[in-house]
Image 1 (spheres, one colour):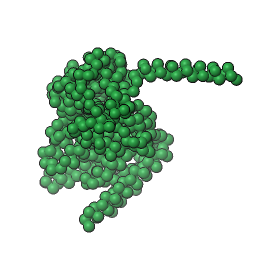
Image 2: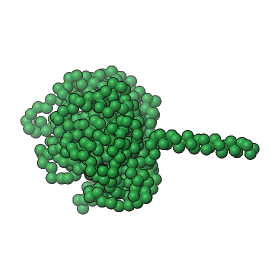
Image 3: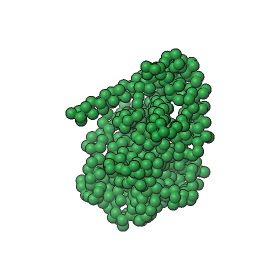
Image 4: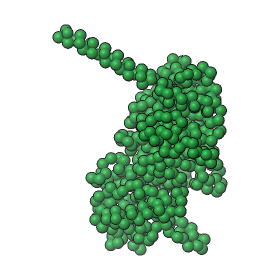
Length: 499
């Protein structure tokens, strides 16, 4: 009976929060300043953050009172949610006489609230404080809701949300993840921030992070890897107060270059239960690899770095293997920053395994000789919605050279896409077989001694007749395209001759 009651409450929470999110999006669609899913997520994020901060401050104030202490609020009174966004009367209802709306509300937010919150970046005692996160968020985004009446309506919907209990935070985190997913599916650059969660969960299960270890993502996007790692560790149960404190402040570390992704990452981690996420707004690749010391290293690295980008020559100077390809620079960074004995799971374009340029060959040599590349997961096309590229996941341990590589060719038995995405069941066999590196129709192993010592080519054909882990190199693809074009021209010429 209790379980049924709990399920009923959970269902009510889901409906209430889902309806609030829908109502917010409906209002944002009327805004000329908000035209994409990215805009909807960004604008929802800063309002959610302030609503969350209000609840956090109230909880801390109540806790202080119970302990006979006085709580010092982070925000001055006029900038607290209860003062400008949702002033309440004695009956607990919105006081319409005090609540700003229209131009007054818009002007207060743009000219007073945002500048005030932006100033926290300079006033904070350190980058690991909630004050610094406030300053970072409100120095990186702006209010795009131009109508003060629309803003009033959205605030009223956000005010309906509650962040106090774990069940409320859990439900909100699921809905926020759905918004991030929709943003990724919408295309353009939204897909950069979203890695399919079933793939992340499988990667976390293979790497198996432990409490007390430091987990890092230097291209964290929406912080999916960090959030899923947190959920994985919490799900193990039997956590002490010390364990929980460790998870809060000394476990998860991320870096993100883009402003919107940074804000979303902060909000996503907060909703998952991390109060002051250790995420820096910075371009990871501007750090010189030679400056990384032992104290800077991490036990676990999980990441899906951006690929296809090109870095400037001055950035390339930070790396021993010079290349403009963003993903190759990130891979060097990850190899360097993981501790000896540390584990990594990195998503990368599948052409990395066979590219013939000097940088790719040198990087494969570095990976095989300085790390134990024990597993390569080959993902089918459509794994990343909105992105046509095929990818592989490299799993490696730092500190000993590669002796044997186990390949698994993921085949869900259907075409993946927006309406038919990757799910957890698709990866169940991979996770199971990977534990023992077992052979199957979809998996096989190669001895490192058989890898070409000049090219270090890792494109290996499935001995059971499956497709190659890698398709043709870019040069071969271009040669084939040229040959097909020539053949097409010949056919067209013959057709014209017959007409």
